[in-house]
Length: 338
Image (cartoon, rainbow, N blue to C red; front, side, top):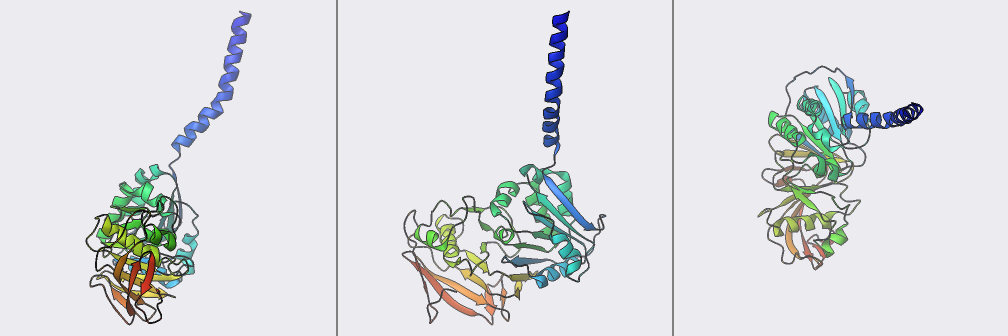
């Protein structure tokens, strides 16, 4: 009997030690994989919305761009989605911009499983404005592509809900995406080796109005991204993803506001660059400098405008760029690529 008591005591002690560990594991498995924060009315409202896209280039947010989104939302529920970060947008959107919204909320989708959560999907579907925050676009491509989150964003666009994005959020708005699966890449690296491991591209993610056949890039001039954007265009053509490709490069502290008819104007400092291919690359191979000629470029500043449907601008500057053996050559009189 004494042996039985000893064995029982040992088993009881082991159980008591393991219980917190097992409980912790159960709690971890029960976590939804997201965080949700809201300011304002938690009930759903359904004001009339006006379609539009806001393409923001990163760094300091453009207040007038957010005001434009709020106006398009009809003052409804404004939702920010992201994979990391905080809810800092909520007070900014809810009160600091001088505009009225029913609510300002942030969903931080920290785990892949969050993209399948019914609460997450319902919250997105009830938004009257959606904004994809900055961060790492690979988180968005990896965790949201082919999921109910992607479907929900498409439903918003079809319903005429305005959608915006900044930095990484902008990067995923086009039909073609620099996915950053293997970290970032510089223009020099891309031009010298179009198939550099870090030149990772993706497609078949978001399908938003006026951005079919388009790849976007942010932080454009300060981070010297013209060369890599031209390289991405060459890769898309060379890989057979499209017969013609277009690109939009948005500078920091700048937002391009695209109306439902495809006409676009600029908020913030500018500029914005619109690129279009006219031919296929001559040389686009691994570990070989790129040769890709006659890319049309149109640059607009504060007074300029552009139509994404006709791909024509006003009050801007038109010129051409060619990549020749890994070096960019510009048709501008001073040879500037920007």
